[in-house]
Length: 351
Ligand code: NAD
Ligand code: UDP
Image (cartoon, rainbow, N blue to C red; front, side, top):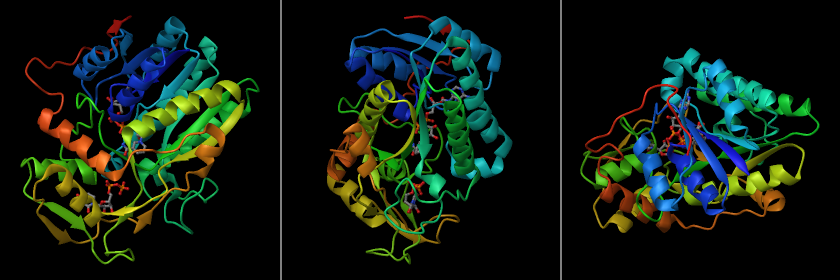
C-alpha cells in the first residue's frame, strides 16, 4: 500500500515507519520537524535499507496538504502529526486546537480530494478522563480533563463523522496508553527537545546524569505503593499495532476505536526500580506533591485489539527499560549532533 505517515519523524511515527517498510509498504513521511529531526529519517533509511518520499510541511496549511496528497495519492494515511504536551496545551489552547483539530480537518479534506478512504489516527487514553471503572474499555465514557485530551476527542469525533458519511471508507482510532522504550538498534528513540514531561525519559536522563533526581508526583494514591500506576507499552509493540490497524482498515469498512495497551499496570516506584536494574545505576528521587490533573491509575482493557486485529503486546517491562537505556547511552543528546539542521517549510523530496 501507499501510506502517508504524518508526523512520521516523531517518536511513535518513526518506529511505525520501520515496521511499514519491513512489510514492503511504500511510505511517504510528512512532518514539519516541530518536535523531531530530519536525522531520524536518515536513520530510518539506513536501518531499513529503503528510500522513501519525504515532505516538510505543516498539517495546518490546508492548501499545501491538498497539493501533497494530490501528488502522492496515498491508499491510506496514518495521522501521528500533532502536539502532545498536556501542560503546554493549557497555555496554548488555540495552537493545540489548530494543529490537532484543524490539522485533522485539513487532512480529511485533502484525503477527499485525492480519493483516499482509509485513516489510522493517534488518539490517547487521556480522552477517558477520570476512571468510572478500570480497566478502561472502549465503551468507557469520555470526559477529557485537559485541552490536549479534548483536541484528541474532537478529532476522533470528526474522523468518525467523516467516515460515517462515506460508505466505502474506514477509520481506526487507536487510543494509546503510555508508550515507552526504543528500537532494538538503539538508533531511534524518544528525543524530548525540552525537559521531559513523561516519566521514563526523565528517569533515563537522571540515570545518565543530565538531571539530579526524579520527582515522584505524589505517594498517597490508592495504589500498591501509593505512587501513580500506568499501563506502559513498548513502542515497537505499539508500532506493530499500526500495521495491524492498517490491515483491519483494508478489510473492514466503518470506524473502530481500539485501546493499545498491555492490560498491566506499573507504579512510578516500580518503574524507577526497573530502570535502575536495567541501567545498573542508582536513580535518586524525591517525593513531591501530586501533579494537578493526574489520576491514580490508568490501565487498558486491550481485548478488543486482539479480537479485531489479532494484536497483543509482547514486550516486557525489562525490555522497555533496557531499550530506553541503550538508546539514551548511545545518543546522549538524542538526534541533535553536529551538522543538525531543519529544512525549510514545504521542502519536498520524493524518494
Ligand atoms: P512526537 O512529537 O514525537 O511526534 C509528532 C510528530 O508530529 C513530530 O515529528 C512533529 O514534528 C510532528 N508535528 C507536530 N506538529 C506538526 C504539524 N503542525 N505539521 C506537521 N507535523 C507536525 O510525538 P509522538 O509521541 O510520536 O506522538 C505521535 C502522536 O501520538 C501524537 O498525535 C500524540 O498526540 C499521540 N499520542 C502520543 C502519546 C505519547 O505518550 N507519546 C500518547 C498518546 C497519544
Ligand atoms: N510522574 C512522576 N514524575 C515525573 C513524571 C511523571 O512521578 O517526572 C508520574 C505521573 O504522576 C504518573 C506517571 O508518572 O503517575 C506517568 O506520567 P506520564 O506523564 O509519563 O504519563 P501520563 O500521566 O500522561 O499517563
